[in-house]
Image (cartoon, one colour):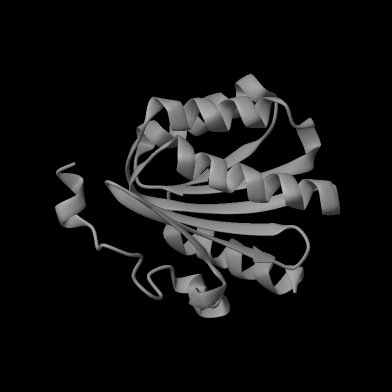
Length: 156
């Protein structure tokens, strides 16, 4: 719980540069004891998430519920996860995401992750191999932001 003191009590407005393309009031916000997350739906099938601090199973369920609705309606999902400020994932949250993704068709989800840790980037790539799908982990925020902006323009 020590992470809480170093995090804002709520998501800062406009922290994610591409948020200027997204309205804060349109975000679904989830706060946990050690962090927070925001989620936007853009167009029919683009989800954008931003998470900071510690994430948990409930935060994962917020994402998977929205992702399921998109998949049911559109048949495919493009998702950009801005997880640069994630400090920890509770094991139950990782398991929730992994179990959910394993049940989805291979080519239904195009997933992009911005993370601040090489270990986490490697874990994402290993998870992609286990799930037999490509999951792109970015180490460079500018490249991630450029790809996200392109996806937002395309989705609208």
